[in-house]
Image 1: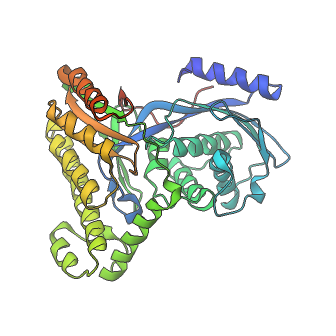
Image 2: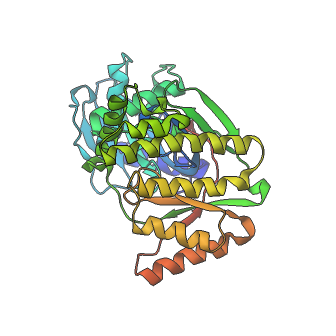
Image 3: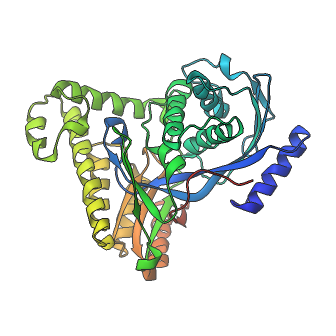
Length: 388
């Protein structure tokens, strides 16, 4: 499936065949990779994501009876029919909980959404840490926003989609993924302060600098709803309470040693150290990009991976192998991206050496007996939008 006009026509035709009439429009929302700033968003910290060219497309038509009918070209099964106003908190419901939760969040906020028929098709890899769930939520919310004339700002749509995932899917995620999908712009990374929701689009023209950012999907599926993600968040909140601050964002880097000395539990200390140093890495990368020193961010990415591996303990053998093999082959820097427990890594490399670095990673996976990874170039792309 194509992601532009051809993809829109394809999804619209599939909608017509499925529901018997044409849709009112077609919308797209992208997946994302996070350049730096992992597990900081639910700690009120800083993040630096970019949107991918991979998108979730939704052909949508309004209804007036309060019913939501959902169909996905990527999931085995027929049309799911439900009433969003009857959706129960606490998760469950499979894939349909993501778009249904987004509609319910709009209803909860007092917006008049009277039902919809939706057909979805996506090129965002699932389970790869590239925010396929956020793309599904955001594309649904944006379509409803446009069709029902709600005039909800993009940043607010992102907040409602985060609420949907927290409450109706059961994943205690932060705000980064939904905001990236809704608000990123082409050829930029998004600097987001997740406490105040202040945004700045930062130019990120890798091709113009002779660089490439590779995404390596390890094809190790992660499932954040199973509890490991929630435990990390709970431990961070425990650390903030013990230190007497609203969130770990409030621990400045120069106060880290004092904060760690005040914590008795080794696991809590490690989690706190990661969040505080990761916030500092986001600001370090931002400063380098503002000065045009893009190549210099490579070692910061690698340091971020070490922190995620050792202090936050969310990496794994395949992700560690990507980083080690890519850096050994001449990459400027590498790290896991996303929530962890599988998923993807990013690799910053010179354009001239990108193919060699990718081959080194594939060869390392083959030698270790792992399934071959999927490697592609991350092109900073546009956020959610109407296509037709």
